[in-house]
Amino acid sequence: MITYYDDRSVQVTSTAIRIDGRSVPLAEIGMVWHRRGGRSWRVLAGRGALGAAMAGPLVAAALGIGIAVWLHRSPTVTLAIVGASVLVGLAVGPLADFLLEFLDRSYARGSREWEMWARWRGRPVLLLRTGDALRFGQIYRAVQRAVENRRPVPGPAPAARPPSPQKGIGSSGSSSSPRSRP
Picture 1 (cartoon, one colour):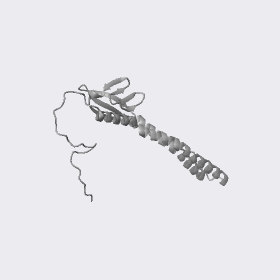
Picture 2 (picture 1 turned 135 degrees about the vertical axis):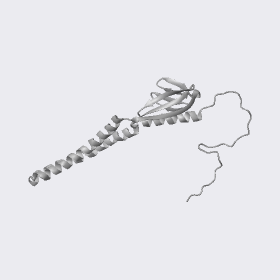
Picture 3 (picture 1 turned 180 degrees about the horizontal axis):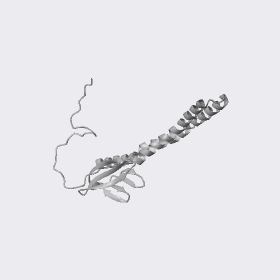
């Protein structure tokens, strides 16, 4: 038995797909497809909040410098206000690294619901629904590999046919010939 994907709730093997305790034998699956749901405004708002949090210290620094110039105070007070504003602006460095990591994870997870469907025993069945695009892609690809590599169900012996040449993955069936490029 070959394991194509395995985590705490999903396991894809060469014999079955197990999702949240439900098992679907691979030999009984006819076709697998996916659907993409609508965008989640909550996720998009979260990304906007992360962007605002990163821009906040820079805006505060710019406002501080503008206020220092606008007040026309003594050079010492103006320099103190500008210095404090620059320090606030410099705070964006470590904060930006932290927030950019969250933003990167947000894009990896995606902003949509993803569904994986299969034709099982002649009927469409929802196998998986998740909002994590990265995980969904890994599971979907594992299911594709498992379906492509599954062993045929033993049945009556087929009639003898002449041997056909082997084709590699992705070959179109035609003989290969070099293409000219402009």
